[in-house]
Amino acid sequence: MSAVADRTSQPVENKPAKKSKGLNAGQGRRGLLLVTPTIIFLAVIIIYPLLKAIQLSFQKDAGLDPATGLFVEGGSAGVSNYTHWLLQRCGNVSCPPGTIGAQFYDALRVTLFFTVVSVVIEVLLGIWFAMIMNRDFKGRGLVRAAILVPWAIPTAVTAKLFYFMFAYDGIINHLIGIFGISPQLWTSDPWAAKFAIIIADVWKTTPFMALLILAGLQLIPGDVYEAAQIDGASKWQTFTKITLPLVKTPLMVAVLFRTLDVLRIYDLPAILTGGAGGTTSLSMLVIKQKNEGFHGASALSTIVFLLIAFAAFLFIQFGGADVIKRPPKSEKAAPTAPVNPVAANATTPGA
Picture 1 (cartoon, rainbow, N blue to C red):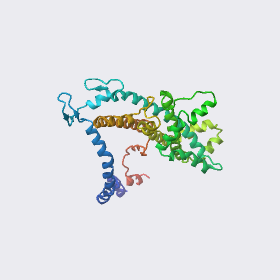
Picture 2: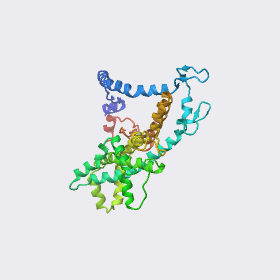
Picture 3: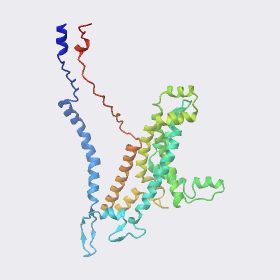
Picture 4: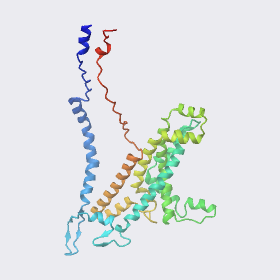
């Protein structure tokens, strides 16, 4: 018994378990070597043009000096290129109506209008089309192919197609004339031109939205729907309580991609209306400014980039658009007191 007491009285050292090491130095260098070409490629095609555009936005455009009448190379402009757009200042005075500088907020409102209306309609139609394509019925492959055809058509071709359809003597005015509606100026009237662009954009990109949502629907186990049916859930309850929550992440990713895409819309309004009827977007305004001054266009491009980056941040941070799936934070286990296994198994003298 004394031997047992001696063993139990001696503390047992609890050595912490060694943490599993990650990549060793050789593996880390090898991994860095493998990703270096990709990093260099992205730096050349993305980072350098972005930094160059920001640098040019703080410089003056070359032109005639109003004081001397001589041609000057420009120089530092400070923030005057940004105040030209944000405060609509042309030199020391406000930009006159009709000038490019005075069109910034009109173009911003038009771009946001296109974004909100187009994305909302595309989400509703995309969910509907995705649920149709997700069903098991005869000819499903043909239906899927037919729905995805508009997305495969180049945007410039789509714009030209709708340009002919929305012409004064086009098929759209012919169809509405059957119901006694007078022909509309779809490419020049302020409201008609806006909705003509939205209709073309929705027709073109709704299949993209439906494709991403369909990918999320196919990941939902069929057992979930069977259990809901056994519990007596209605179709609406199944849709709102099961389908939407489980498809939220791919849906928000699709909304993110489409929002960023519409914020930089250029080709559809440029080809379909040419900016007539107040349909000039921010990207169209950049091209107009480029023809008059490259540095002012760089400042406007930077503003558009910041707007798109801010929208992406809001979607990823608060909207649930987790493009890169991040694992949930693991809860730390509460520390426990060390246990002496010898003392726990030892018998007492009176046992």
